[in-house]
Length: 387
Ligand SMILES: Cc1cc2nc3c(=O)[nH]c(=O)nc-3n(C[C@H](O)[C@H](O)[C@H](O)COP(=O)(O)O)c2cc1C
Ligand code: SF4
Image 1 (cartoon, rainbow, N blue to C red):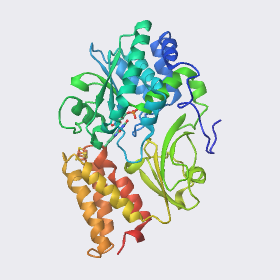
Image 2 (image 1 turned 30 degrees about the horizontal axis):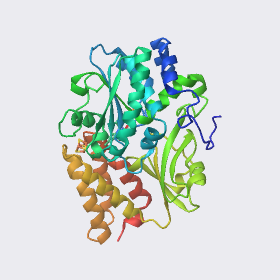
Image 3 (image 1 turned 90 degrees about the horizontal axis):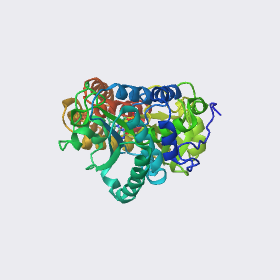
Image 4 (image 1 turned 135 degrees about the vertical axis):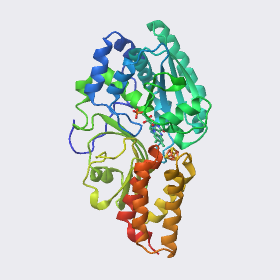
C-alpha cells in the first residue's frame, strides 16, 4: 500500500467490522508489555500536534507507580481549521473510548476524562449514552475504569495539556512549567496520560490489526493513516482519511481548485507552504501532526491571512509570559504599519526576528509556534505585505 502517492485509507473511519469493545476484550487477554511494544513498533505518533511516539508515552505512564492515575482524552480541538475530532466522537466514539480503556488497562488507571471543547457541549447527551454502554462492557470484562466528561470554557490555550489540567482543577487555564510532565505530575498532582481523540482511535486500530499490518500504511518516518481537516479554496472540504507519506503536490491535485497558491499545514500553528515547495512531504520535518489543512487560491490576500492569524494569537495568548503577550500584539501592529506605509519594508525583517525570539523565549507552544506561519507567509508572500 505504502508509496509516495496519495492513497485514501479506511482504518480510523471504517465501520465497526469488529466491535471496538471486542478489540478491547481481545487486547486485555494479551500481555501488557507485548501490547505496548506493538504500539511502539507500529510507529503511531500523537495526532494532537507535537507528534510524540504514543507507545513510548504509554510505557512511561505504565511505569508510574501510583494508586491514583488518570487518562485524559483531549477533545478541546481549538486549532482554527481543525474539525476531525468532532467527527470521530460522533461517528466512531467506541474506537476512541476503547483506546482510552486500553491505555487505562496498561497503566492501571481507574479514572478517565474526556475534555470536550466548550462548543461541543451538544455532543454530551450522545456521548453519555455511549459511556453507559461502555460501563456495561467494562464490568463484564472485569475492568475498573470509568469515564467522565469535562466541558471546557472556550480558550484555545486550554488544548495545551497542562493548561487543560489547570482548568480541570478549577484554576485559570494557563500552561505549567515543564518538567514535570503530566505523566509524572498531572491532574491533582497524579500521573496523567493525555492523548488526542484521533490518537486513541488509532491506537485501538493498531491493537485490532497489529503493528505489522499497520506499518504497511505510510512511510518509514510517518506510519499509518491520518485524518485531514480540509478547508479553504477546495471543492472537497471536509474530513478525509489519507495514508501518510504523500507530497503536498499530490494533495493539492486531489483537493485544490486548480489555482492553489499556498497550503497551510498544521493549522495556524503550522507552516504556510508556497507553490514552489509543493514537492515536499505533507508532514515533513517541523510540520505539526494535527492535520488542519487550509488551501488558498490566487484570489486570497496573504496579508489578510496572516493578519487574521495574528489577531487570533493576540486574542488567545493567556498573557502569562511577556514574549507571547507583547510579541503577538507587536507583530500585528507591525504588519499594519508596513501595510499603511508608516514603516519601511525592511521592518518586516525585524518582525521575523521578533517572532524567532518568541520561539525560544515563550513558555508554551502557542507563543513558540507563531513564527511558523508568520515567517513562512512574510518570506514567501512579501510583496503582498507591502504598501
Ligand atoms: C496552544 C495549544 C493548543 C493545543 N490544543 C490541542 C487540542 O485542541 N487537542 C490536542 O489533542 N492537543 C492540543 N495541543 C497539544 C497538547 O498539548 C498535547 O501535546 C496533546 O494533547 C498530546 O496528545 P497526543 O500525544 O495524542 O498528540 C495543544 C497544544 C498547544 C500548545
Ligand atoms: S506562550 Fe502565550 S499562551 Fe503560552 S504561556 Fe506564554 S503567554 Fe500563555
